Image (cartoon, rainbow, N blue to C red):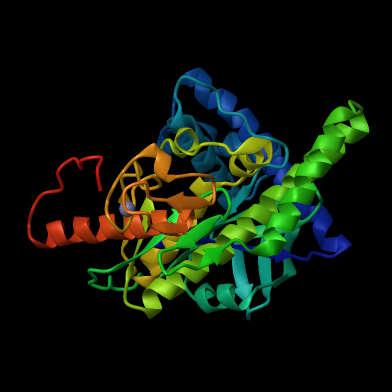
Length: 369
Ligand SMILES: [Zn+2]
């Protein structure tokens, strides 16, 4: 399984200048070449190389390998959508292959620039270092708007052998808590809630002021918020995968398509919280971490998971008295609404797996649980 590791580079001023000049020249060349390729309708690397390799080197002073990468980059972009001429921003990511970059020990990388090689220190976390030995092939050099440099390295990671399992940890994604599992644990915590509220307030305040400064700040807040969400989603998904693996269970989540329509919004604040949380990202993280750990992940039909009683199976809208509370109108079972849903999700996954093991093809499921 391929993973991308992000490592921050710390070039000093002397090294940052040629790096920046190289990225800019490379993209200038790519931008020009994209126009050429589009004009002659060629998206094949070998063919474009025949006609444009020498020109590229001459006009832009690219090294041999940079020219090869530039041609590949342009062809790849053009192939994605042949109706459009691809464009390359001044600081678009620049690809480096092993002939243009080499790692020196565990904390420095040598990168080819237009002025020769520069050796740049970088910092890796423990998680990255453990996987870094598998680094090979290509990396992307990225210069962010804030002036920070990153190297995105693709690594091949061994995938854990899937654990055969018939039991699951059900996970309900929701409003009050980002994730509630069928063991009754809530994954959200107060710091998340506090930060979310702070961001929402900030956004509201800035939205009222229609100045350029406010708009700029708003953008910065949005970036900060996205990074915070991403980090939290990493933390939550990691915990859930660890719990499932540690107890020999699989993971069960709802099939997310249409989650926004399904969940009723209990007041304005709740709606805000829901729309700003990225459940799609959380499920994507869960999915790749589960694959790495060999934990099976099953997606179940989301219909009725929140309004069906886990005790007696009675399903009706009135069972859900509020966002947080579940009270079965048939048997009187009282529960935390998210936990009740998580248990239904678990039950559905277990049934799905049992049918699969019995060799019954998964039929379109009936809405009733
Ligand atoms: Zn009931």
